[in-house]
Length: 213
Image (cartoon, rainbow, N blue to C red):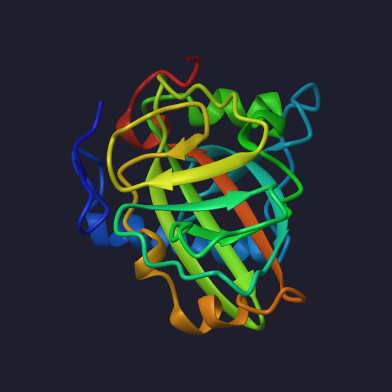
């Protein structure tokens, strides 16, 4: 187990300091965006699984990557204080202040089983890279063994610990109102496509734990 500081999105009880962890996480995100992450050492692994060596050490992180595409809507407000949501629904009313994009390609139920297994580990974190209209924002949340991942329509990321069928990540460092306003403004155009890259990472190797959950 590890302690989680949601406000600063810090992890404690690691073998290196928190600043270094953030360097690794953002380095990892950059590598993934450039498609330069290394291939699985075990060819029997699901193709969604990848690994990364940190700082030329022998520490390997197991990760899974998903890509979700969605579209903007004229009623996108993104003003919710505790959540943000991507939905497969085509319509959005002004009351849907947590929704940042519609007509999504996936709900949480459609995610790869390997990804689901990884994000359901208590030692997992979730990096969400949102790109639209030439703008980018990054959100970090944590996984949980209690995640249901059963909703076929929605993907929801929460600052709280509340979990229901659409919840993908909890204790996130950002909700809808915290996201880049340039990115959100671009998503008020229905022709703007949102690309969300979901990166689940098991931090167990950094905690000195058993990675065979």
